[in-house]
Structure formats: C-alpha cells, structure tokens
Amino acid sequence: MCPPVIAAVAAFAASPAGTATLAGLTLASTGVGVAGALQSSKAAQASANYQGQLADINALNADRAARDALERGTLDAVKHGREVAKLRGQQTQAFASQGLDLGFGTPLDTAGDTAMLAAEDNRTIAENAAREADSLRINAQNFRADAAGARAAGANARTAGIINAGSTLLNGATQIGGQFAKYGGAQKSYAPRIFG
Image 1: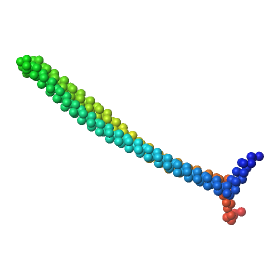
Image 2: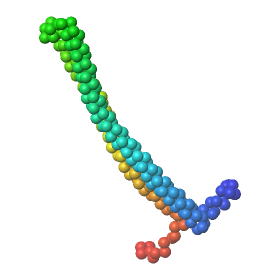
Image 3: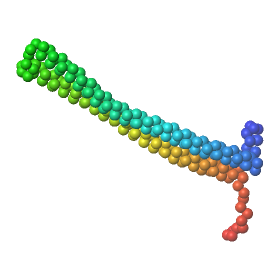
Image 4: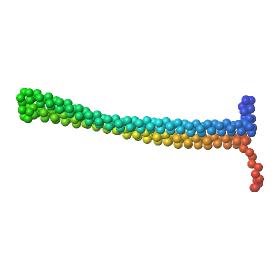
C-alpha cells in the first residue's frame, strides 16, 4: 500500500489537469534547458573570441619587439663603431707622440688587431639582435596560432551549444509525449475501424 501523499500525487498526475501540469512543467524545463545551452555556448564563443583577440594583440607586440631588437642591434653596432674609432684615435695619438711610424711594426699590428676585434664584435652584435628578433617572430607566430585555435574553439562551442539545445528540445518533447501516454492525456482515437 502506498503512503497517502504518493497516492494523491499519482491520482493528480493521472488526471487531465495533472497531465497538463506535468506537460507544462516539462515544457518550461525544456525551454530553460534550451535557453541555457544556447546562452552557455554564446558565452563560451565570446570568451574564445576574446582570447583570440588577446593573442592577436600579443602577436603584434611580438612583431614590434622583433623590429625593435633589430633596430637596437643596428644602434649598438653604430655605438660600438664610435667607441672603436675613439680607441683607434687614442692608439694613433699614443704611437705618434712616441715618434713611431704608424704604417709599420707594433702600431700597424695594433691597428689591425683593433679592426679585427671590432669586426668580430659587430658580427656578435648583429647575430645577437637577429637571434632575439627570430625568437620574437616565433612568439608572434605562436600567438597567431593561439588566436586561430581560440576562434576555432569558439565556433565549436557555438555548434556544441546548438546541438545541446536541440538534444534538450528533443528530450523534452519525448518526456511530454511519454507523460501524455502514461497518464492518459493522450486522447483515444474515435476514427472508424475499417477492418474489424
């Protein structure tokens, strides 16, 4: 034997008013589920698009930083060239003040060594600037890939939301149909019987 509350609920559910109430609640629940799925997918898409925009901005900043690295390398090379020129002037002055021939012996060797070391330093400055710029360009490409991935995730979230909303809608329709069938809300057909 059932407790009285369960029996009363079952009796109400079996009545036409109860069937309509259950169908209405199921319909409302289905509507809320559909709206929630669509809104959730919209929010996920907006978030992913925002992440894509941030990645685009980061890519632009990395590109600018790469150009800046090359420009700094050029400026460092010019600065270094000035320092070397100043050093060569001091060397020349020191050798000339001692009365040495600048085109022969130690003064000539010193000038050659200074030029060779300056050329090596300039290559190092240029290579370091190029390496830094390459690293920053790679970062920019990675940011662009992140942006594309975020946009794809946003599109996927939107599609998933639509599919989830459709699934919720179908599930709700199935439940409503089941309630009408179970609790007698479905009308008996009074169509004439043709065969017996």
